[in-house]
Length: 370
Image (tube, rainbow, N blue to C red):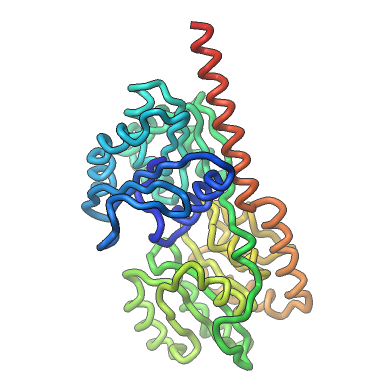
């Protein structure tokens, strides 16, 4: 596999790839991961949960940096992938090194399209032919939401594209002892990194309206460049005493923070299938989320509510409606049941293995036929 970011980086992409690779190793398969030295002090080579991880030079967290990293990592990926049965590109930016291995050796190639970055770039005329070429390099394309799948199919008609929802380690993400004391007020958690696309600004703007209806205490778990501006906005709106910005927390601690909340809120402006939302549901939290991307594919009225993106008034109305329900705990239990049934790590790994085996069988048939 090749992925821009990997553990100990935190995020939906990183969680998905780590979970998948670990589940494959647990089933007796060998997994090598070529990724970036995106954080200071990361070793060039190490073992992580049985996954052999190889890290190469990384210049910057933007498209130009991703491209430079991908091209510079081609020699490493060609060496690591020698003898591999399948090569897998996790994100479109990882296609160049993975496609080089496919072209050199004829190894079957899978591409997974994860993020809203793909959707945003696909709207730009300059990027569309580039993305079309990248998508066409793969033998099989996976997309983490219907929206991403439709865009990929429109870019490259005839390429096999399958929607595959992200997954959760349900043995880890479950209701546990809360990480914080429970106040007398209603408890809301926003587990979001503080980047513009995650829409946390609109949650902060909704808090005055929430407070008019119910006594609320909110925690925001996640960090990012938006944090100083959001903290100033909370001060300006007079709600700083009702929102705690906790910053980033280790992934292993998130079940405790999620278990503190009564409702999890995802005010995203762009989203694939949110791993964080699935993790909240696995911890028996009803979810209030924007009606964007893949969120409506996992959240409906039986496990939460949807509101219009960038609309604090609609968010207030829907969240208050949710908090006033007398079956809130039952909704949370249904949410966990849904995640366990549909989106566990075991189901994710088994589906990937079926795809890998199908591609291997097709390749072997072509070789015999040739």
